[in-house]
Length: 200
Image (cartoon, rainbow, N blue to C red; front, side):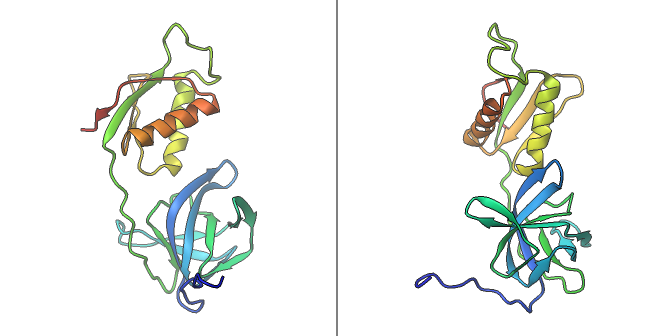
């Protein structure tokens, strides 16, 4: 408190929230996480979503608002400049977009997301040890898990060939893909993976 300055920002300026992360909920759908640079927001507000790749803003309504207490997510009714918030009600929002006011649109400069560099083939475990560790072992279950991962992991790319039970997963390096594989393993998924190759 003595040495760290308070957040910069004006409550009277147009709302500016830069989406820096995504989460997902079975009940609320896609959840945008970002910091409020300027302005204020409350549940029920109609907002504009501005994307650098689209000429016109999309409209949405804030249906749920969360803040953080340590690592815990807590329900709030309103937030203002300097707060880090989670917003629900925007099913197609993505990282790098700006949530702003409908009437006074103020875009925050976009965050560049690096393109994938490495690819790995995911498939059903067909080794002699198959079925001994995981609960989720079918290609349908693996596919559903990868589709869920794509909602929040914007640097990940997955090709779903229609004529195959394998999936080509591309990420920003071996560590990026290793974290995904280990997370899935801890969740009970059993997969066979190929050696990494440079993404073409």
